[in-house]
Length: 240
Image (cartoon, rainbow, N blue to C red; front, side):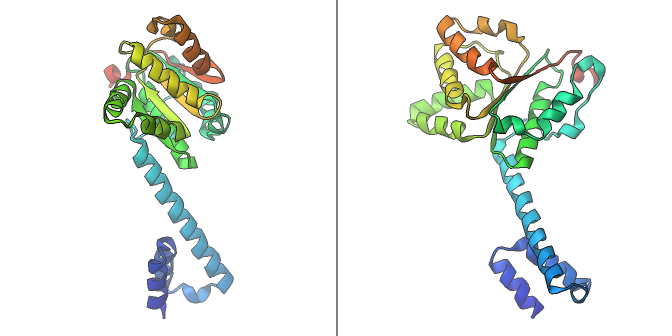
């Protein structure tokens, strides 16, 4: 009978239930539980199993640069990373509010690691996240245009609860990139969250855009309703 029950659970794709039921059977604990206790335990096991599978799928789809978590962050005073700011981000309520996050600082201070950690936390909560290196993103969009998939790719980006644009401002921003970035930011403004990391101080972002009108439109939307993290200090890579 127990084998039939486990087989039925597996066939119904209730693998969390089946694993717990098998464990309880092998350790002879089934007889010590009431029907209500057993049912509650099985349902809880299935829920936890599905949540873990969902998180794994979200993390895999996001393609983060680093496997990182907020618990690993270094709050050394010289880095200027505030624990209260990170704590306010950790529940991911900023995504529900469609707030943006800007992480700036010199090269090597851990901007991408922090961005990846925030992204992992969002996946853990159940949000859809995509990580993009800025240069590779616009290369991908250029290919999508050539193949006739540009609108489809923009829609894919728009559907993400959080997108991470890493290494903003390292490479020149030509006319095509300006317009594509404006499209992405406009689609998300007030609806979805965007995290941008850059080694260029925000005060110098305007210089990236030769077109003042487009610059005003992009920066007004990026900087509105934004949480700022301004890192300082020497390169962590050099220290290691």
